[in-house]
Amino acid sequence: MTTQPPYKGRTLQARLAPKTRIDPLSGCHIWEGACNRGGYPRISILGKTQLLHRFLWIARYGPIPSGMVLCHRCDERRCINPDHHFVGTHQANMDDMTQKRRARRERAAADARGHSPPPALDVPEAELTPIRIYVRGVEIVGKAVIRPFDPGGKL
Ligand SMILES: [Zn+2]
Image 1: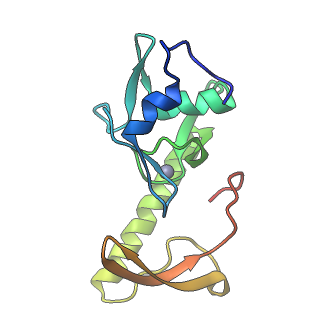
Image 2: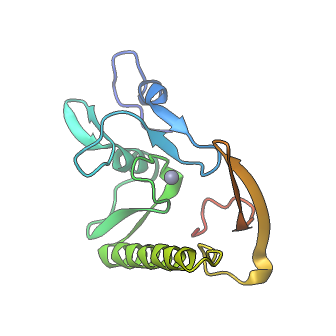
């Protein structure tokens, strides 16, 4: 981190850490502090209310070009992990949302028909690995794409 705003004896990290929970499965940094009405994390920095995920992204990568918006790769509004955000045009964000919504609808429809839901991502069958995981005591059996972690690539 290069940005060290002038806090009285406390770094931003020290301030955020107690209110951030890291999800080991998704890698999301879930903010458990205050959020705005839209459900996005907000924090007061130097007397100004900031959207936290925006602030952290800018601190790491620099200003967001005008006309561009910051988008979530993950569907977690409270996620403040800069690796889970990318800059895109407003249109790209809308397309992304439409596509995610459509994928959710298709999974729900397949569920309703009693079929096993299709994979979340449009990938060849050969790339899918059967998985069995436990999340909070609930067994989930499905297929997933297991790839080396690539923070630069589009997930
Ligand atoms: Zn995330």
